[in-house]
Every structure is written in structure tokens, then in C-alpha cells.
Length: 393
Image 1: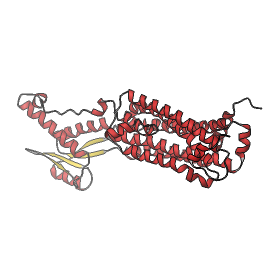
Image 2 (image 1 turned 90 degrees about the vertical axis):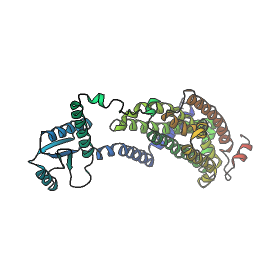
Image 3 (image 1 turned 180 degrees about the vertical axis):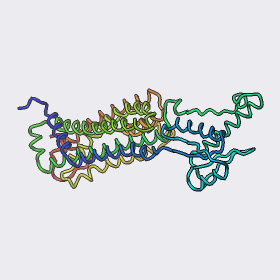
Image 4 (image 1 turned 120 degrees about the horizontal axis):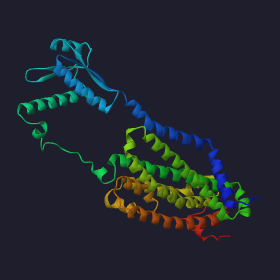
């Protein structure tokens, strides 16, 4: 006889069954590949360097192009702007029309001309235009016996990232990441919850549960199922989070890693407790059914609650959203998003997490009571109210 606690055997069996399920493995693998594609592919598609050839007729034009080249290389080491010397304006125009150069920059008596074969020169036009203006301003300042700094004093506009100052991140990025957190919990709760319910009803339908219940206390059986699937859900989430963080280091989003790491540190306990709060209820929903066909009826209330919480949670704003972030289970969907936005004080996630702990304890008691009373009932499906009226034995 094994000296291990019965619930550990049940948990190990739940994990083994899932890890040998090809659909589960393929689904997890595809999720990881899709996540990597979303993070990495755009960086490859958008990483093509910009190389420009600009026809110039004198040293002034060549100097402007040289300064633009330095600016481009600061932004991207593989980008460049090269000055191509030509005899005069006509030669520059011919080079542009024949496609030998991307543009022509010609200095006149009172203005510069930028020659192009079409209206769009991309980033080259604003770079050349800004550099010409900067050089002209410097020349005019010297002529007037002053400096550019004195001439432009009071004309500079400083950009202040308020979100960064407050410890948050850009609203769009915060919403996208918050939505991803909410979706991960929603789909994990649905997928693994249905797995728990389906496992229970299959054991009832095949009468295996009668043998198991004779050998293993029902609470040990419930504990094993809940913890086994919780480990799987949490492990899958950790894998997705790790891949996301590694993938973000290869793209420009790595600047948001500090804020994301803090949000994940809060999200993990919210996810774990929120999942535990629902797992026992899912097991009870499975126990209420006598056949697989009955599962849709017994799990529908729980599924609808999750759908409503998800839809409402990602669409609320203002005071209603703040209040909703303290509602157990809903807080797993909303509070991480608020943390990403820098919209919380320390006491808020702490209080929300404490409320989830209390709610988790209540649902475990309720779910286990329903599970024990309905587990051996095999003559048709039960309603939640009727199951509570059954005797434990």
C-alpha cells in the first residue's frame, strides 16, 4: 500500500492524464507559437533599414546630407543617407527622374529645393527639411551676433510622459496587457473548469466513482482533482508569462518590462486564488450531472457568470470600474489592469486579494458540500438548490 495521501494520487493522475492529452499539448504549443509570432514577427517585418542617396551640387548640400546621415545612424545603425555629387540642378533632376538617387537637394539664392520623383519621400523629407532649417537658423544667429540658444530661448516645448511619471505605462499598452491577463484567466477558468466537471461526470457515468468513494474519502478525491488542475492551469500561465517576458526583450516593448513584472507579481496570486475559488464549484457542477449530456445544464450558471464578469470587467471605467476591481473573481480580471495603468494605491490590491481569500474559503466550503452530497446521485441531473437539500450520506 502506498503511504502517500490519497489526494496526491488523484492530483498526480489528473496531471498525468492532461500531460498525455495530445489536444492539450498541441493547444499549449500553438498558443506559445502564436504569442512568439505576435511579439517577434512584427520586429522582423519592420526592421528593414533605410538607405537614401541624395544628389547635391555643392559642399553645403553635402554637409546637410552628412548631418542627416548621422541622425539616421543614431536611430538605426544600418540606416544611412549618402550625398551624391552632380554638376548642377539639371543633373540632379535627371538623376532623380532616372532613379539613380532618391532625392535631390539644391541650394538656391534665397531657398533650398528638394527634388523628388513623387510626393512621398518618407522620413527623408522631414529630416532634410529640419536640418536645413537648423543650419539656416545657426547661420542667421551668427550674422546677428547671437547664438541659437539665445535666439530660441523660451520657444522649446518639453514632452512629459505623465503615465511614466505616475509609475504606469501608455494607456493603450496597459489596456492590451490588461485584456491579455483577463483573457488568460477567463479561458483557463473555462477550459480547466470544464475539465474538472467532465472528469467528475465521466467517473459517475462509468460507476468508477462508487469504487473510488469506497476507497478514498470524497474530500480527498475533490482536493486531488482541484489541486491537480490548479497546478496545470498555473503551470500553463507561468509558461506563457515566461515566454512573453523573454519575447519582449527582443522588441521595443522591453522598456515596459519593469511595470509588467510588478503587475505579474500581483496577477499570479489573484489568478491562483481566483481559480481555486471556482475549481470546487466546477467540481460540484460536474457532480450535479449524471451524464455527460447533462453538463451543459449544470455548468451553464457558472459559465454565464464568468462571461458576464469578463465582458463587464473589460468595459467598465471610472468609479464603477474601481468598485468592480474589489469584487472577488472580477478583481482577477480588473485589478491587474488598474495596476498596469498605475491607478492603484498599495492598499487596494492588498484589500482585493484579502477579499478573494475570504471568497475562496466560502466557495471551497460550498463546493465541497455540494460535491459530497451529489457525487453518488446517478438518477438524473440535480439543481443546485436540490443538491443542498440532499443528505451527505
